[in-house]
Image 1 (cartoon, helix red, strand yellow):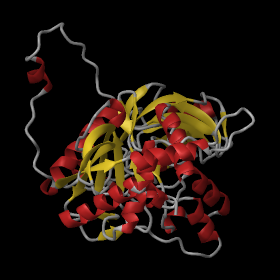
Image 2 (spheres, one colour):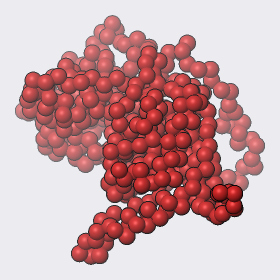
Image 3 (tube, rainbow, N blue to C red):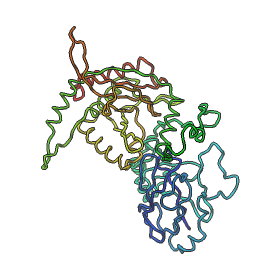
Image 4 (tube, rainbow, N blue to C red):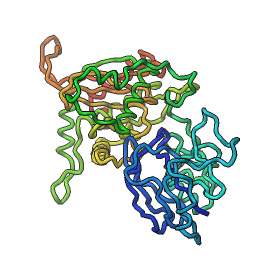
Length: 453
């Protein structure tokens, strides 16, 4: 039977994607695990794999197509023994439309996620890592988990995922095959306002239409550049954050003289390879990441995620770090930053930054995190307030280190001072708890040897 290839959901929040290019052409033989296409999401370009074998009979959505909805038909595979030409001629629904449900009763209610229902002649499937288009639900699993499960004949729908946002990963499949039970993880994300029922959404903020805005400017004096997926996502999520998350802000000035001395000692002691290249180079930002991670676990009640029904208390500190890329930003996550060495953090951030600029980060590398760091000190910014990115409960805004006069033991001295402002979600922590958190951070920054023990 012909197999419909649907636009995959590469992350729990993905609604549309750009089909950057096909890596297979019509008539090519397909094996399970073959990379079929590259899909651009709002944050990254992902390779997606086939989970079925056959021949690529028809490409429905061509290279370079933007804003393809999740679960929309993008291609058709002819199964073993089928004539690819006849499948291409009549085995797939019309382009741009998901396969129709056989009866009207199969149409999901307006509040349910839209999924493509299979036709009797063409069972719907998705690329590896995509949405599970059965029973009106989405099943998120990594390509490796899907491959292992398929080879073992294991039904992924029976498993609970322990990856980010409940995604099924390799360890869950292996635990099931070994007779274990994968632990279910409470979802860390809140429902975006755009996906809430109409009566539950926060009131919309009146805004000027595009045409009204353009009337303020003289035609021909500006260039109009359409928003890409990343800019749309940033705008939507941060607007929702300011509308739904009650922020409060706390600022401290940190003396970083001792931190700068320790950093210099650590980098001088770094071993070198045969090309005289150091094994690592620790930055001030790397030490800030470590301090944030340790501060979170040392202040009970600050390393949390707020949900409508409960508070999620995390055992380790997953710290997101904002990285500027062309036309936007991305926040790779340093997992368990409280347990990592400074050299490991430095090398992880170097790798993340390089791949982020090429949009090669995987969704589980930039999703999640209990807090975030935004460091604009390198741009000469003294202090600022950052916007929380839900479901995180805080964000540290780090300014530049500069020489300022301070009073010490009754005398004026010059010291290197760095201003840091923490934005907190008042639903997750009260002012006193936020003050404890930033005080613990300041203590670690001003006494950096505490990060090494």
